[in-house]
Amino acid sequence: MPLLEMRQVTRRFGALLALDNVSFSVRKSEIFGIAGPNGSGKSTLFNVITGIPFPPSEGEILLAGKPIHRLPPHQISRAGILRTFQKDAEFATLSARENVYASAVYCGRMTSTEAKEAADHALDDVSLKAERRAKAASDLSVFERKQLMIASAIAGRPKVLLLDEPAAGLTKPEVTGLSDLIFTVHRRGITVVLIEHVLPLLLNVSERLMILNHGAIIASGSPAEVVRNPEVVEAYLGK
Ligand code: ADP
Ligand code: MG
Image (cartoon, rainbow, N blue to C red):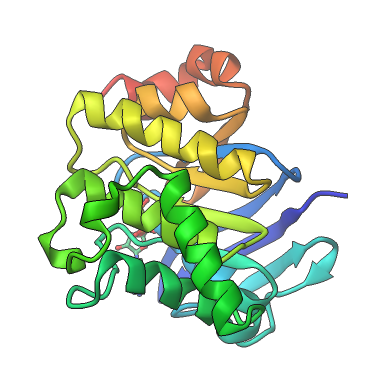
C-alpha cells in the first residue's frame, strides 16, 4: 500500500484548472520529486494535501490507505503530514532551539521532556553549531535557517514531509549541504515529497519524480527517464 496517494485530484479557481485530474502515489521511505514551470500547480498540490488553505475540488487523498481529504487541517497534520513553505516560516524572535521545540510540541505526540530531547537530537542531526542554537531565528544565516527548518521537521516526527522549493536563495555549495540534510531526514524514516526548481538537487535526491504543466502530470518515472522525455524538455528543461 502506498503511504500517500492522490486519486484524480482536481482543484479549480473559478475557470482556472490549477490541478487537472492528478493521480500519483508515494511509497513509504521514498524521496519523491515534483517539478514544473511556474504556475504549474506544484504549491497547490501541497495546499490540497494539507487542507491549508483549501481542500481539493474533486478527488481523493489517502494517507496509509485512509482518506484525509475531508479532514480538517489540524487532523491532517496530526495524522503525520508536515509541510514547509517557500518563505521561511520560523518564529523570528524565538531561538533556534525554541523553534525546534515548538515543532516537536505541536505534533502533539510528545510530553514536554520528550519534545526537548527530540529538539536537541534534531539539532544534532542537522549539525547546527551549539553556540548558534540560542540565537534568535532571525539572526541565523540563510543556510542555518534551512538547518533549522529541517531540524523542526525531524523533531515533529511526521510520516511525510512536504518540502516546497527548499533550495531557494542558496549558493551551489549550500545546495549540496541541503541534499545532505534531505538525506538525513530520509534516514530518520521520514518519507519526503520535494518540490524543487533547482534541478541538480531534485535529480540527485529523488528516487522517482513527476513533472506538472498547467496542472497536469506530463511525465513521471526515474530521474533518468524523466529528463529524456521530449515533452518535459519542451515544457520545462528547454526554457
Ligand atoms: P506553482 O507552485 O507550480 O508555481 P501554484 O500552485 O502556486 O503554482 O499555482 C498554480 C496556478 O493556480 C497559478 O495559475 C496560480 O495563479 C493559481 N492559484 C493558486 N492559488 C490560487 C488561489 N488561492 N486563488 C486563485 N488562483 C490561484
Ligand atoms: Mg509554488
